[in-house]
Every structure is written in structure tokens, then in C-alpha cells.
Image 1 (cartoon, rainbow, N blue to C red):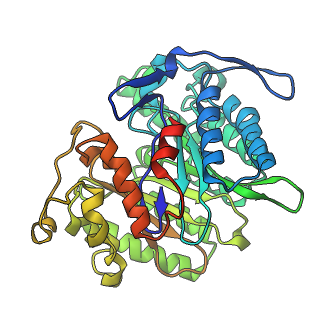
Image 2 (cartoon, rainbow, N blue to C red):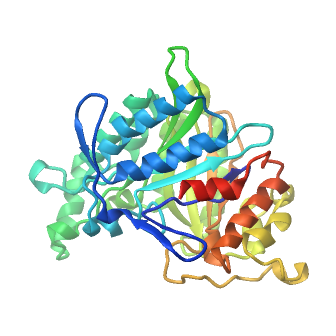
Length: 413
């Protein structure tokens, strides 16, 4: 759920756990036979999962006329689901890293002051590496899926093509990495995979051609590029920024601010995780986003990142003390003791720990915008309390409107 600089994701995943401890279903054990409007068979358990969650959220927001809802659901059915790996298999589960419980799909709702709520979702297409067809890391298959999704929703591909070219390995880099891994004793099945996500913002309106508006985002991981070339993640990221900025001095200045902060802390303190772009025409000001993770979860550490270690005004983090007790389930902790307190994790072995930050840059903007992502389930004493505190944060930020947040969550499960 997006609230300005704060992002709290509500996961609708493979196994839905209710507040009373019951489990709704395990969709890895489901198969549904369906037919698209073009007559082609779809055999997928992802279809009922995506369809039921998104149809519920589209209705609940009250933002979408019926024909727009139908159009968005047709896009999901005909363009998105066929590009997910079919059929779902338990063997693939650990390759899905989009959510903490290994689902290839996540839904969320974006709230903003004086605006109606909007539904969003993200998917992780999965491609098996295939040395036999010269795709040992799955890059060709993923590129085709991203391009197909962009074409299906009318997304601009200018930045997308440059982004993929900058992050995916060249043929020479790919061959070198495969040889390096083979010489190290890695079997073909143990080769690293290329990874991507695709995100979609479902608009409530139509464009000038009468098509429902869908905004697309692409998410790529720079780790294979760093592994293949021996470069640091920050240097790989810089090469992407330079290519996308095309000489825009403001965007490059924003990157220099962020780079100085990242380098001053090192990978062990704050680590680049993945990168993302808006698939918009350059004239519309698309964003390039760097997602970074830190194991620290204190209020002081969050404040430090929001100000880029003092490079941005202290006011950048003024909202934090107000929402922190709700985010971290620490309302019983005195404010004087809260600043440096590190909250224990409910699941210490999960990679979803600490805090995640997104640093947004765009042409014409000389200062990066910082957003924070909090895995509230890691810090909550009970699941029902997470929903209740979500709602209070939205009310505090003036974004709740007349929505019954708890009902929306329950209906989508």
C-alpha cells in the first residue's frame, strides 16, 4: 500500500492465511481449465488466483466502471497468465522470490490524498534455462515475455529496450559466465537464472483510442552482470543510469548523490537488490528506481537512509516518528527508547528482514526521492494487528477516505 514515501505491501499469495489461523488453499495443488476469448485453451492455476483477487480489489476501490474492470481482467487472462510458467509446480516454488512465501504474483492498492485508490499487481515470469536452444540463463525467454507484456498493454519500449540491454548479459558475457560456472563444478541445472518482474498499474480511465489505461514497470536484477564482468553492483547500476539519462544533467546529479551515499556505506551495510523503470515515453518523465536493502531496522537507521546520510534535509524524514510505532508494532515502547531499538524478527531466516528502500530518479529531477518498504509481518505480534495498523497509518496520512480497509483485505483473500 503506497502512502507517499512509505510503502507497505499487502501480499495475496499462494497460500492465504486468515487472522484466525486457518488456511484458505494451496494453489500449487489446483489446476483450472479455462478458455480465452480468442479460443485458446489456458491450463493454469494462476488464473483463478489472479482473477479472484484482482476482481475483488477492482470492485472494492469503487474507482473502476464495469467495462474498465472487464477490460483489465481480460488483459490478465489473455496477456499476463499465459506468460507465467504453466502449470504451477512445487519444484519451481523456491525460484519465485517476488514474495516471502514464494508466489509469482503480488497485488497491492495505491492510496493518495484526494484521489481514488488504484489497483496494482506484479508478476514474476519464470523461464527454465535451456542450453539446448542457446538460452542457458533464460534471458531470451524473459526478454520475449517482457516485450510481449509491453506490447499487450501499449507500454512504451524506449527505456525498456535500453534497460534490458544494459542489465542482461551480452552473448560473450553469458558464454563466459557459463564457462566460469562449469569450471567451478556447477552442473547445467545449477547455473544461475536471470530474473525479472513485471508490474502493472490499472488505471480507471480509457486512452484516446478507447483502451483501458495500464501502466507497466519492469524490474531487473544486476547481480549476474556483476558476476559475469567482475564489476561492483554500484558500477553496473551507474552504467544503466548513464544510458537512460542520455546526458540529462539533473538525473545524473541525483545519481551522484545516491552513489556517494551507497559507496560510503558499502555492500555490507546497504546492498543494491534490484532496479526498475516505468515503461513510459522519455518525454513523460519515467522513473528509474534503485531498490536497496539494509539489515538494520531502527528508527535512527531509517532516518539516516531517508536523508542519504545527511545529504538531504532532515525534513525528509519528519514523518517517520509518527508512523514508526505503527509500522513496527512498538506503541508500547517509550519514544525516548525507540530511536536505536532494533526489533527482533518473527522469521529470522527470511530474506525479508530489515528495511528496503527505493531511490527514484527521473529526467529533470536533481534529487532522488526515497521510499521505504516495511515487511510489517516480520515485526507484528499478530496478523489482525497488521491490518488495523495499516488502516490507522492511512488515516493518519489523510488517505483512507471512506474505505473499509479490513473488508477489502478479507474480500481479496
